[in-house]
Amino acid sequence: MESKTARLTLLIDPDKKRAFESLCASQDLTPSQVVRQLIRDYLAKHGVSYARNEPPRA
Image (cartoon, helix red, strand yellow):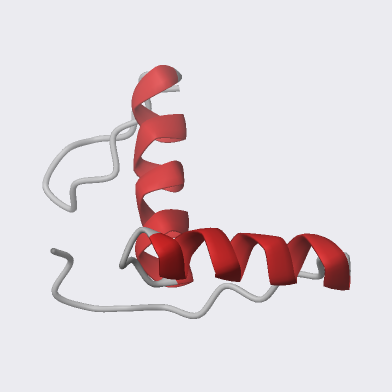
């Protein structure tokens, strides 16, 4: 898990938010856990490094 955190604020349709939160709860996950995993997967898919000691690959 990351040692420091930063806030990411986004707007989402209320119906999608409720459905997302419900699905997360049914899987015993928090929405934050799921969003963090989605971001890690997206970065990996595109070959983008985010480790502090590695230079970015763009």
